[in-house]
Image (cartoon, rainbow, N blue to C red; front, side, top):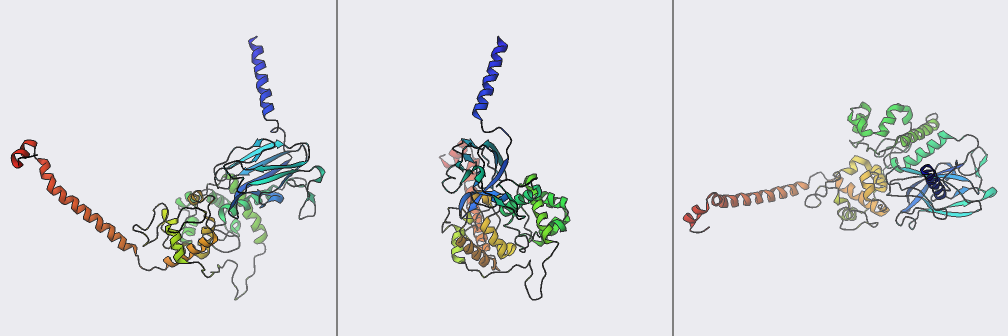
Length: 425
């Protein structure tokens, strides 16, 4: 009897689990990959790979009754998920940059259009909404470069694994690397990465992408030379996963396979492909200073720079100490590199602080002009502040010392001694 009860209990548990997850079984025949990002100041879904690559809130397609898999990658702007409300299918939430989650489900057997969105906070209200269209034989055909046609999310014959890896790598590059590097566009904060898989050993490149801080700390000669060449600005550890590193290497290889075989020809008297063209500064340095100090609030609500950074001669103590001193950041990064950094704010700490609150284009050019102006300072105006602080501290210490000289002898006497000497306590 006890065994029978156990069997019935196990059967009921299995039946309940099957009833609660009717759409999660089966093998998917169509796969989509999305990441989170910004477009025109709004949070959005971005397509990754295939014919949705780079599309904002891409429309997904499926046949009636088809089983599909949707993978969501956190692009680094907070916590996200993906939710199909009519199907009651919701992914787990991803909170860390590069973290991914997948959901597999069967779409309804009838044609129609279903919404998907991010159910976290108000993300759907500010732009993270897309659709899944179910159209039987009328599914849109995607034309490949070779002239064949395939349904979206699928490819003819065997999947192009290398092409997908390269596509994923491009998305990672655009999201995490483009603020400091270009491919064929010249130097920014870091080197131009065109031909990097030819000039560098793949094992070294993989280790560098995975943990540049560890490679540099090991005394690696290539890393040490790069640090010296690029104004002692170390490449930050982006916390890339092994899969992301492999995708980046695959992307660099795909680019180098096309570009290295036919290098660009340079002509005398013209700028080389890697030459950085300096554009005239159009911002207002005085207004940029107000943005830096917080005298004028940032439009999107971000924290003013001086809360974390310092510039010589600004404020009593020159600013915050959480981030580096920015007095000569213009020289260290160069105009194009600093402009790119202000646009994307690629540093992990800043991305957390400015999540959903990017600098506007006008704020960027005003701050750039301000940093260019303070970079020209040849003197160190913060010496006045230094002596002010030192003098004030010395004066307070002197007052304290004189007070101790007066009161300390009194503390050394006992109560009876004070009564006999002073006639009172």
